[in-house]
Length: 275
Image 1 (cartoon, rainbow, N blue to C red):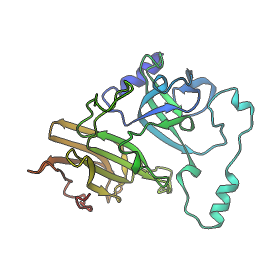
Image 2: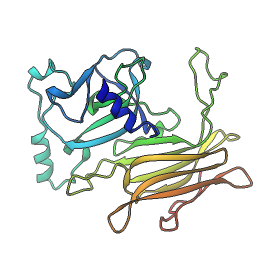
Image 3: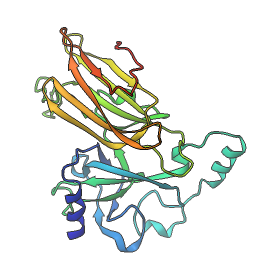
Image 4: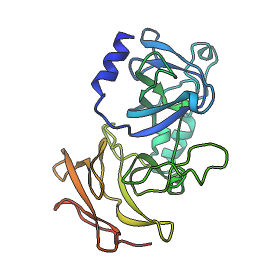
């Protein structure tokens, strides 16, 4: 528990990068690897809200023959391998895909109601991302949402709920996405390769595209700062030099109340404001 608390302390100032829940009961570990001496405890899959957590980071590791459930009992069954599929794809000169080459481990922050250990690592095959319904339509098999932050709104809409469930009002968003194509030769994959900013028109009750850049690769965390109409977000972007550099995007609203963005001088604005 002391080591878990130390993990939580290291990231206490970090904004949650995504929300997740368990697909199956799994081990909470001190490090992103399956070995016997780093298990903190077992997280049991319960109701949706009872096994939810914040994702604060992740790590890609070369895919290994591992069970879908990170559970010592399940290791008695020899897992199926995808080596034949991977080799067949190579023979056909198909580009390598992330979900064929890598597994992912999530570093998670847990509430006391879910776990006495406040932080740890969970094997990605047991994790399902909880996408906000209003932006889930932007999720595609070849281009997945990895990180998102609200830019406004988020208040509970009491009128929209008929079952007592709290429903957040629609809002504007900054979203980071990742394609399924392998982009690194040395295993140091970018966490994201596309940035999308959405505004919300409360009169039309629809989202509109403020900014999209499909040529930015970088690393999390995504950090949103400011309040009201004076907000900005910072992402760590791979520069032409190959180095990762923080870039700050400033957000503002025009006289008509439409969300606008000012990207850094060396980052192109390659998408017009469109419905």
